[in-house]
Amino acid sequence: MCSEERGAIYSETLVLWQELQESGFQATTGSCNAAIAAWRKAGEIQHALDVLPYMKLHKILPTLLTYERLIATCGDAGLWQVAFELLREIQGSDSTVTAECYAQAMRACTTSNQYQMCFSLRDELKRLDLKLSPSIYLQLFYACAEGGFVAHALSLLAEMMSSDSDDAVGAIHYTLAIRSCESTKALKEAQYLYQQAASLGFKPQLAACNSMLKQLVINQRWQEVITFFQSMPEQGVRPDSRSYAFLLCAFQELGNSSGAQRALQEMKMARICPDVASFNSVVAALGKGGTWFAVPAILNQMKDWGMCAECSLFIGSDLKFSTDTRIARLLLRSFEHTVVPNSFAKLTSVWA
Image 1 (cartoon, rainbow, N blue to C red):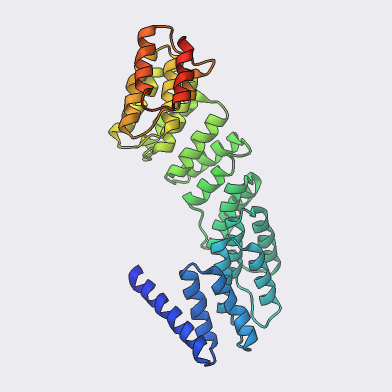
Image 2 (tube, rainbow, N blue to C red; image 1 turned 90 degrees about the vertical axis):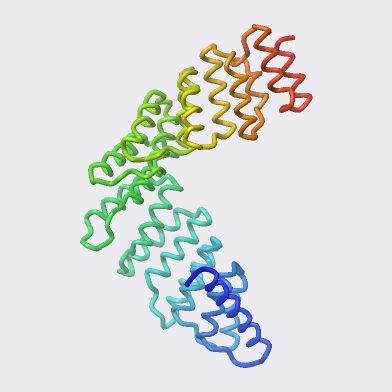
């Protein structure tokens, strides 16, 4: 069934629900569950949640499916506190809470940046002797990545690898574990995880490569950034604009103007659109390399991409242009129609 057909069914369900409300007929548990699913599909979160009070008012017994759909709705909106209340309500009823309910509650936590709460739910699952499902592991790894919980990520990997279940470790788990190292500058752990994933035969994901590049940049390992970037095609990974942004940052810091220009040309050939920050890195690399004469060509490329140069880049104390007036005039002509008048005046004052 295509998405349009599903959308039509959900729309029809909502119409029928509203007609049922207006007719005065008693709704059933099945019709309430269908309404929750339809409201959720329509993005009407509060309407979906309001079905439960309606059921209680009309003494319609909620089922486990009712709660699962409500908690999934909370997951969409990041309503982790409501999800927790629903979990407690299940535990106080005759229904048996499932791992899927916990998985959706964890999704509510990650959606609302309450990453530590995911591990509280994990501990509760273990106390209830419920098996951690693949979706639960994924939510936990995502919490590790976003919250910077390196130790938790390492522990989860070890737990999954020692398990006899079918919850096999995959490249996505290693990618998220590597990302967990970013905020804590745990470069050694990230490198260990990257190498371990390779030894297990996992092809690196682009997100993992970009995370490694980011961490090398954070740790100012400029030459290693270049080496790692150059190894990506050999590993079967095609760099994207973010990968090139990290590479250009390294060229900027090293003052490698030829490398920066070459990288920009590669992006053009690969039809990868650079952002303003990438162009700024190229210009900064040209400045540090003493090749200001190439800047106007870079600015023209920016115009071709429909971007405006940031005037502030050219008036920094460590990036002043050569005193060669010919270059100054070229640069000013490049900026003439791309900067606001007061910025233009400030720029011209550099050579006043």
